[in-house]
Length: 253
Ligand code: 13P
Image (cartoon, rainbow, N blue to C red):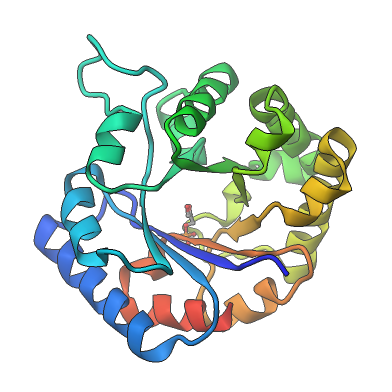
């Protein structure tokens, strides 16, 4: 049985104080109300990572993620944050290749491959995002599009390395739009991804790797999505900013 993961991506929201309040609420609710083996991840803005890590403390089932990381180890890269900086404030996970980073910050496949390498080298767990824009879905090319994204940025990894990666399928047309992929659409794509992994690294790896769904996941659609056999959790944007909504999703896992 693959352990489910529910990750909240706060994006560029909350002040430090609001972030601490949100994290505290979630950590307490998880402690008091969750008795299943679900991994919760809080992906806070860089400025809040240290304080959120402190609040999480040694909690086994709540972890902290960054929303991006530099592919470089150190040096003259003004404004960038390295893997070792993240590690030094207690971060264990990092989102790589979110569609917003690809679209607004022109992150390329090659760069994302390097970010994945840097994260793995520094023992951060990458949550690697993939997903197609609406026009690609309408042309019925979504499977090929996502397969190409995985090929371009992950296919250089060894079996040992890919086993440490979590994949998040986030159809771009479902992000922040209130338009969720149907559970069947999500399942179909997750199955395709798992088959692609099986053909590259073998069935054993494919059976173990976690594939999350992201895109307007809410308390009222989370259960149906996460009940699909190949959906191993969620990467949640908007609904992760309200502790009760996020808890509703965690409890559906
Ligand atoms: P929403 O849940 O707000 O659609 O965002 C999804 C997302 O982009 C998570 O990374």
